[in-house]
Image 1 (tube, helix red, strand yellow):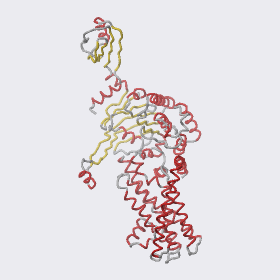
Image 2 (cartoon, each protein chain N blue to C red):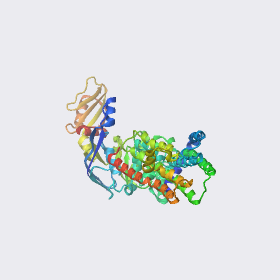
Image 3 (cartoon, rainbow over the protein chains, first blue to last red):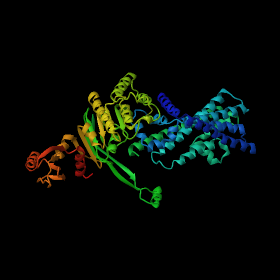
Image 4 (cartoon, one colour):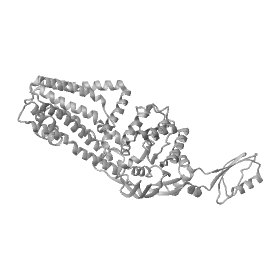
Length: 260
Length: 325
């Protein structure tokens, strides 16, 4: 973990060599999610509510997912852009260093400009929290933090799965975007507005439901969600990383026996 | 230090035929060809040796290096380096080796070289004291003082290669793999790199395994050559063994006072001729050079004589030819 921050420090220095580009990218990342948020706003303007969800409530959901996405794009960018690392042969370099592959891949890239997106979603979160009528407690705040952390793990896990595919093929990685960008777009709404199979897929296969829908019910005092269940479900999201790590190890082993 | 026994490695490479139709077909069904990258490779290397590992492109050089540096797992065979099996004890083992890939950088592109060195110190967990000493020694012998504060992207290729080599030695490895360390360098940098490799070998006893296409590197550094071709080990021995085998050919250049007819010497191959100068190729095993000179001095007035051995480069070409690789 100490080593990871050392990597981040050197990448930050590198990034600072291109200050203008950094500020522009950050500004862009700050503004882009506003268009998505505006879309959300106008939809609710037109329909008032969706399946019993009000605008402020969905905004909270939106903010949590976008925060998680921004943080994981910052930290796990190395996995997101892993194909360049493999194609360029630089993964061999990682293998001749006496450290684990995961910390080294994480440390290979850090997307500082995503801080713009993070700021934007933090603003939305603060705004949504201030407008919600639900009563706040320490437990609820804890659940909210866990939701974000859990989201980070899920997105990072997907990045990792996509990266693992690079060991077999460099082409066809677009499919992973269905789950990252697609997953983000889906999960910014509470999952019960979708068809049943979609909800099920995003609860049991890729557990976005554990990050937004189930704990959200608790925070907003909706339905019969109890505290314990809502506290545990984000943990299930965090557990998503475990199979991803195993698949990653499988991929590394494959790479080391085929060298391609 | 290194004992390798019967290494085998086969790659399955997807076959691609020309044409759009074929490319489309390969989307669904792929045919694979087996490429035997290593076949029954065995050798051993003692501590403190410099070994030139050579062979034409695609011979299996980098596959062997990858196996020895713990990147690749072979299909069969054993490899013991300093008591480790490289691919099994990877993280423990690689602390003891340094690897320079001539064509790929291990430095961070946009930051000063020193920053890269410090990160490497943290990656390898080099104790501060040891790091200071190594850095001082490397800065001095590789003349890095002026360039160490510059970002890598501003360095020339020669400067960068010196930094690359320094970077791979910060953790005082006892085994160094150099994969084409002089590729693309100018003459001055090449000589500096070679001199440095010799220095660390002599003073710190670092064992060096060197792959290169530049036979001058081999001649300047390696006492021993391992030749590999089409995945097989073809030759393993001292440079002098190659010399005594192929080095019997000499080139004789003679400058003389004007002589109108071409000079014929029985048994020698005339390479070029002018009224003032002639060049022969002579196999010293069958023809004595002093006899040739004696013969010539009776026919023309000799002004200058030069005898050259065949360059090592040509001997290697002959070795390749002999093995049809």
